[in-house]
Image (tube, rainbow, N blue to C red; front, side):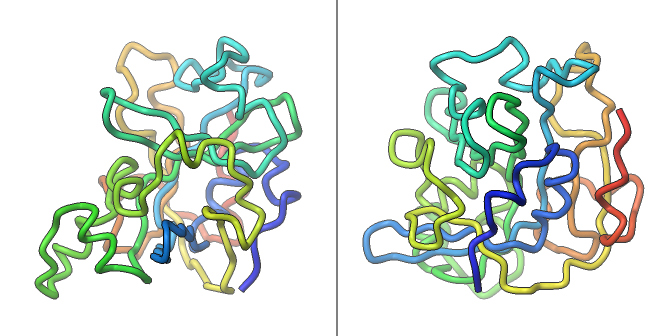
Length: 224
């Protein structure tokens, strides 16, 4: 099992996003080690893109909040929502380009009991309880103890980091593509096909509707 290298992330987010599916997100908080398989992601395009992505945090350029996005690829960009929850992205493209991929859902694999304690969920052995741990961008951050103060800017390409993305050789199979979730209907980017999920996963957070593509061809599915 090896960390996904920086070169992997130095590409457009719509290419990186489907290829992140099946990789493992590993979080170390104190003595607890928690890991989940990435099953759902969304791509957000950098401001250099020919068609501006108004849904992206970077679309107005660098700020104190989003400066990680404009740095070297392969780092965690963690931001807060509603003043109490967090979402995690990995930044993509060469330095200065600021594309990123939002992690939307994981399949819990290791440290499930620690995740459940963090989420306040009683594990009864059911798929419903297990699925509820990490089926959503804020839920997965809560379960894995990911917060802006502690994790924003961490290098995800370092296997010994408190937060890393690693490859265990998993065959992700087919990928499904839909529009992103939660985009303002008035946003010009609302219908862009930039949400990717494992077609057979039970841990996806939202609907699995849209185009199904072969994983080996997934890097070519988006043309915006």
